[in-house]
Image (cartoon, rainbow, N blue to C red; front, side, top):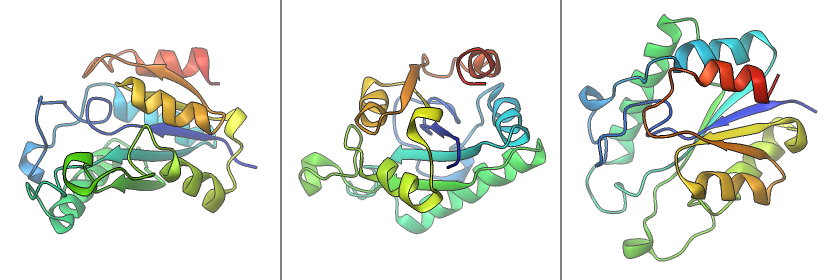
Length: 164
């Protein structure tokens, strides 16, 4: 079974702006995150993004725009030698779509990744900026670490200390 580093997107990988990233031009990588992802890549660890994207249900952006945002994320990370293995997102919002199992703190997206990639949950870790990120991971037996929004400069050290 494989080891995985699960990451929330907004606030961890990219700058949390207090509102939705609705266009690729608004996507800004957080400092230090590419180095941390590259370190995980170099140590044989899968890197999987698990993100709530309720702005789709709210009509603020489309799945096609989200794909463009993720393409930009992948390109920016690749420019620094870092690779994402998979991105799982929930397009729902409880105020619009009702409750779902894939929106964190629901664990369905993490469960799908575990099954698809044959991941060992107890050897894996989740970094998020909200309690709901860690709650979703805990349901799957994955330990988590809460990071303050956009405070990723020391994330490599946290990964080295708590994960490898």
